[in-house]
Image 1 (tube, rainbow, N blue to C red):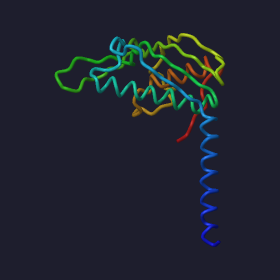
Image 2 (image 1 turned 30 degrees about the vertical axis):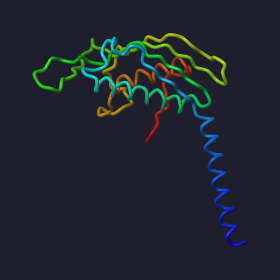
Image 3 (image 1 turned 180 degrees about the horizontal axis):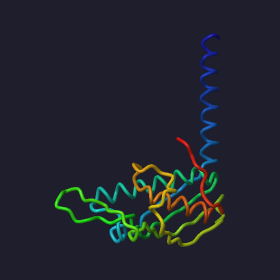
Image 4 (image 1 turned 120 degrees about the vertical axis):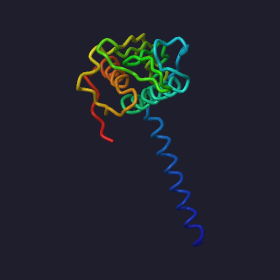
Length: 172
């Protein structure tokens, strides 16, 4: 009888943990991000590693934003072009330098579908760009990879999907 009590407690705690996990996964948004013919993108990096890393960082950013800002909804993104902020300058060294100028703005094109319980809430084609990407209002630190592109995605989601001026600041 005494051995049964710890087992019952363990079983109860395990069941509660699974239940809370199931509820949390239902409440969170699911985002699916794909990149259509990335070899034809305007500028996603210099080599395979740069391109793969950039796509992974952008995919993770879309997913994190959807989980935070679109609970219970599903977001599907198909990226058709990316032009990162700045421009890779030719260099004699192995590592190339990305130089930021006012005319080398970040741009991105994609189609999107926002749905909830199988019902499409909004869909369309987005061609986003940030003409003033070098201003001081970027919410990301200088050390953040793809900070200009992430801010541009944040601005699109706030305006086009959420009807807001900007997303709320999130502290780590």
